[in-house]
Length: 310
Image: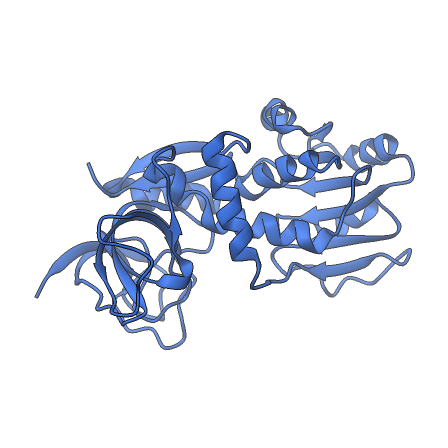
């Protein structure tokens, strides 16, 4: 029996995560076994556990590495290929391990222009940003306010929106304002300043076309800066019970099967240098829980990743 190191939840009653020795996952004919070189750290990684999970359950949702073994129905990849993968809510466990099983539909080929650390930082935040842009339905000349814009999702949204000619304003602590401006944000405000909604309204005159509430609990404040008849898109799903005012729509970001193709295109844009990927810090495997706790503060700039190999 082959064993590997992994970060696991030991039962459903506690959300504590610990490092353990577990067996390598068995793959189906539709899956590959990936030797994980790096994994991304997500805000919900310790909580995203499927209802039918068997414990100890390996946590995590995204990573990058080399294919170590192929399922019999996987024909468009080979052993040794460098890939990005996701493992969201699959019963056999996630990406926070030396090896992970991944369905062939989640695999994205990774060029030599990208490091494993960069690859691991893309899938979840990149897909969320693309889904958010689809839901916002904005056009060149429109204005967008992003609440909590300096994190991994906001880093992509600012760049994707400005590339389309959309005027972007974002909120974050003042230390991140120069960073957001470097990505293309035209207006930055400090959410600690009680006057920030007025600053956005002054910038956008009658209010912004739409707002993206990335951070939970920012939906109501975001509504203040949206023009009559505009929209607030919530990433987390919070704020859907808000009383509508001024004919503003509050809607949760949805998921669309075509978005995976856009993620593949985003990977190519990042590899070509057309979209900037920001990794605030890389952690060693032994430091993974430190990285998780930092991400859970919601104060990370860009993305945190963990190196599995030496």
